[in-house]
Amino acid sequence: MESGRGTEYRKRPGESIQHRRRPSEGGERRRRPSEGTEYRRRQPEGTEHRRRQPDGTEHRRRQPDGTEYRRRPSEDTGYRRETSENRKPRRRAPEDVLYTQRSEKSTEHRSGSGGYKPRYRGNIRRVRQRNLRVGIFLLVLLVGIAGAVNAIKAKQQEAAAQAYAEQQAKKEIQEAEEKEEDNGLKLADESEKDQWYLKLVNAKNPMTQEDVPEVATETIDANGYQVDARIMGDLEDMFADAQAAGRNPVICSAFRSWDTQEYLYQNKIQRVMAEEGLSQEEAAVEAGTVVAVPGTSEHQIGLAVDIVSSEYMNLDEKQMETEDQQWLMENSWKYGFILRYPLNKSDITGIIFEPWHYRYVGKEAAKEIYEQDITLEEYLGAEPVGSSQAIESDSEEETLE
Ligand SMILES: [Zn+2]
Figure 1 (tube, rainbow, N blue to C red):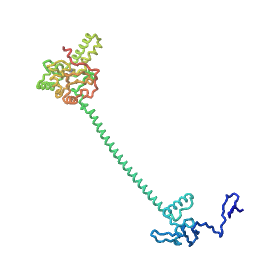
Figure 2: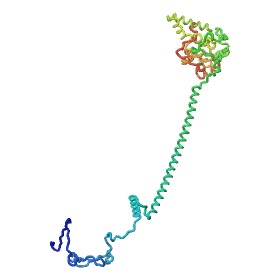
Figure 3: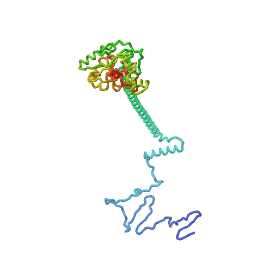
């Protein structure tokens, strides 16, 4: 089936229409050359390719310096298109090798068959050795770091332990010091507590009539006051020194027998009953806050002396302001006497502040008690009497009126 000029049209079933051109005469297809231009198809070898200018002149390329440049036939192949057939084998760059190596490796991994190609075994071994070296280096480094860290930790722990030990030692020293402060008071020795001059008599340590010691008394002065004969020497020394210092203290009470104390106490009860209309029991309690109940007064053991100023003879707190009393308060301890019921110690002594009541305790105890500013109860480690039992006065002032 023919159509048009020299063109064959065929159609096969299932095929798209193809166009074929009938080959022209001579089997060679020629393109119609444009005006004045010769066109020849390049022959495989040694063919000449010339171009003519439209004016018929031959076109020759010239070099920049004006010389004529002709292409040699061999040079003609200078530019060729590279195809799969004519591609020259190239030297592979190292990257290609590595790439190939990797790709082969990966291939191997994928396929899981066979070892490496002999060509790359050296590299693999080197890589393995390098990895091993790096691994060993890292291991050594880690061990080193771990060792250093452990050493630092050990040092820190050691330092902490040392600091803790020092702290503990300090604490112990501090506690020991505090304990010494608490019990730092120099108190009476156990053996000394039984000495006659440290005999404790108070509301919590009363005596019965039978307990009252047989006191060998001695009369002090013209007024007829008596004291335990054993304190006479120190008492006289004190008065002598006071007078030498220009002071003139006077004794207003000293040893009282049980009977005398009993008389004072009962007399007080009767007066309270009469004045306040109380029963005898109530009056006895009331009287006990003013006059010491028999058996609870230090005057009964001959070791207490009430001393007042010759310039002020009242038994009250103003007594302490007198020069005579000031001298006694500062110096009595040197002769073995203490101010027995000091200010702000009523909760211990059970007796109100009495700046006239002196008690003989011996020179050593008097010094300790005076310097430590404590009471006889404290010095002996005795239980405090308590302020609730405080009485106003143990003196016989009222009955002596
Ligand atoms: Zn007294």
